Length: 166
Image (cartoon, rainbow, N blue to C red; front, side):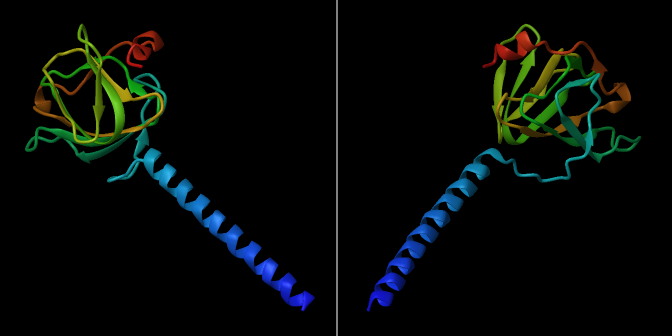
């Protein structure tokens, strides 16, 4: 009889602890889904430190040529990563596919950008973009009329400039 009580007690403890672990695992999965970005395309090559602060990765989708005079690609910015200030002779279109980040045209306030946003940067507008401090950013970029040039890189965005967004 004593053995049956011990087995019953052990079974109850086992069931309760398994349910608690399952609940904990489900909660951890839900939390990781909130911070993980959905990758549509491969991560790509790490961007050069001379043009980016932090880790940014570029994956080209449509290379420029004489027929399709546009450049299209995907950039993933890790949390805190951002581009330097730069311009595009024919402008740039950004389509945010996941995450949260910032975009700023010189002389204008910083915009918070997120999944589903489309940003049209005018030709020759000095601007920067990147991830928020705690969430990565995934974006598609379109640079039209590449026969006019692609990008002119400038100075890095300072931490002071970046931190005004927070």
